[in-house]
Length: 138
Picture 1 (cartoon, helix red, strand yellow):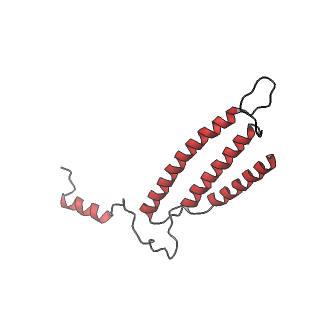
Picture 2: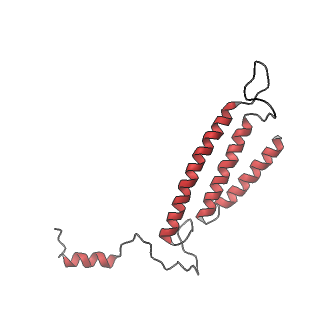
Picture 3: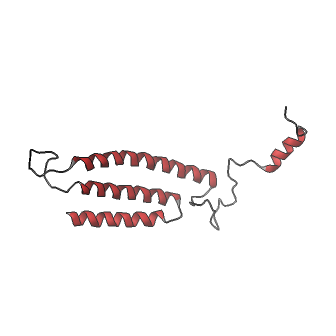
């Protein structure tokens, strides 16, 4: 049982590192989510893997430690919220920048490469406004 858990956690960590090293924001978000699941499995296994045993028994009986189970439950809730937040940030960055590269660069041949970011103010419109008012504020 422990060998299966160790191999599963190792494969999940390997896949998550591979995804996090890619240059696309969605792959990074999926890699972070997969890493949090691997850490949750590791924490869960640290409490002891006992099959068909209740969580708490009388004195001297074999039992599973309930603390890692509570930690994993809390980590699942926090991980879900952080994944949703990171996904919204990735979608917003894609909408603003026109691509999903982590560093914001456009790839050659990208159809949205020449698109100007939406929140950017052009210098010419600012300078023409200053000329119309004579450079004085009202």
